[in-house]
Length: 422
Image (cartoon, rainbow, N blue to C red):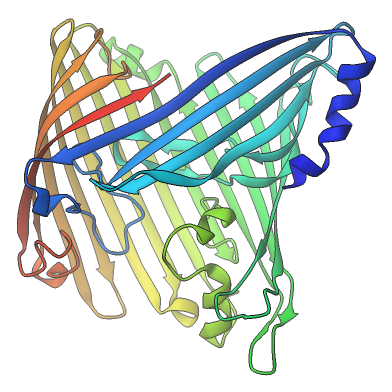
């Protein structure tokens, strides 16, 4: 890993200057089980959609264990070191090491208090809609960058993310260099912040053998996101935030800022580079348009999460996909006691497959009783007892609900989940 190669460079200041060091931990974890073991792998998500509504609808155990070291040198420079191993398993199976989610160092107070430089692997400036575990902007990976350079009315951040991508068909372990240039301008207001995002991706040409060749590929994404921290208080007299975003991606950057290259190795699916080699055509005509809005707001008695997504994706010449995806969800909370709350979740997803002229629709609902140490939609740890029911269209039969519901257009699951973060 690049960070390990450069570790001696980061250790030099520790030897030269006096310093104070502080160790900390953080993490995330969820584990669940169903009361019917035959339904342990049952989850309800629409084919072609990038997410599913997650309450009572998780199919894996996921644990992140983070360790931090914060160093303050006598000359005022600060260093932050962070590692985050990830552990994963399908429900009711043995959990095992998944990958290093993060391993990076960041130095600040070099020029001013806001700017920093970093190197390594990190979760980079991600944006998430929590209720469906959807990351519309997630360019995490190995690289280096500059954070929050003060330009007066704007702050500039730049990240170079890269990965050597290996096709599964190549027996000689050759690879092609994937590179991503991530540029963000942030304007802060009293009520929130406005982010302008631009991304350029490039994949080098490569001849693997006599029959497998990859032409150079490129693409770009443009997006604007607005986060408002006061609108829910002004309208509903409830604390919270509202996030709205518009995205356009083309070519290699067709996923509009949600491509994490090192994760391609971990899941059992064909990687981007395999698709590029096998498609027989380039990716340059592929494009995606996306609009999102998600909200969270609460008071001492009730809380809400909402989610809206519209996406049009056209990569017919590359992967045979041409579709639009619409998603809408609502999760209300009722804090009827300090340590207990009633939660419901209603989610609707529709994917119109324009190639096969099919429409996949899914209606998913969940009711849950949660137990926590205090009130609040973000209060963790939380223990959930849940019941989930789903109904889907005839076109989606055999594509939703796993093997257990392969012959059905409806299903349910009853179980218990523990979720925590710190």
